[in-house]
Image (tube, rainbow, N blue to C red; front, side, top):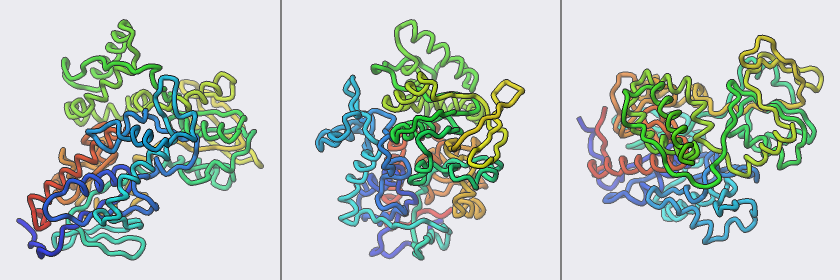
Length: 479
């Protein structure tokens, strides 16, 4: 069954919700590749520029890309474009720390946002892509089209919708948030501009979390001249790893052999790391090979094994896969060597305010007795709030309630097909509603690293372009 054809003078409308790299990437590739009747490509993004999102909108000079510039690009078929863009503009002339001794570049994170924004600029100027600087408040299906309302009072009719939002920012544990909310140096959300301004140079700081965001916070504090003691606590006490001193070859093959399971994959990785070491290759080459085969590995895992992997192994994967920039690693190493940074495995059992101090009961892992410590500031860096997708974005919850979206069983985002089409609670896919970026991780596996995000954006753009060609009038099959 098809909806009524649109009049020939009305081009199809593609609405992309979210203008970070995932959404901007879809808009960029769709604007360049769509043939025939050109669609109206409308990106909903409250920020002033497309392509930045949360990650690349930072002005903090301590925030650096975690992947060498030579491996970052919006073009899946031209991986070196970002580095070439930097060199053509001498864009790191004011950043002498960007270049490492081996010649690799780890520039400030905002620069990648500048690059993506520059690619979109001509498409915006020509009207091939339109930026609606507003936040979406509702998305509803009416008479074969989507009706999108935003917080600026806009009402938009669209034929295809691509959801390219991401996970909400970290959320402090409820009890902790209520106990400490009144303290001026309780930082619950580091993504807010100037969030760390409240921390004084000699403050004793507790950082809850120990991943990439925690590393950013510690580097940012050091950049500001902070020299007080820092405790970083996470459930397993795993610190983000750095890059290999020199590039490592890929090592291992994880697609052959035993029936796929979380345990067998872990055993294969451990065996490969040992074999690689014997050949003078670091673990980096093994983990990079797992990532390279990641999509096929994920597809081969039954849902129960995917859930087991997410529940038990994801923290270990994250600290090896998502490496910190060498400049940030050096800050952490220096702080550890000077006994200014303590890394603990455990949790915050309780906390209370006593005057200007924050008194915390820390429960070390595998110990019965808690530790009582006093701090001047507490910073939450627990990573994306995967469980808060629906609570923080009510329009998504409404799409679930109306039968158009469903949560993925792994808890990583929304259920979608291998064509990135959203799957509702009935199990049926909607060809006019697509998921781009990290919220499609449950189906595609590794979708947090920049190379995978840009590849997926290109893939989604190609899927949409194909739908528009098949339905030259812009009508998409109804569900």
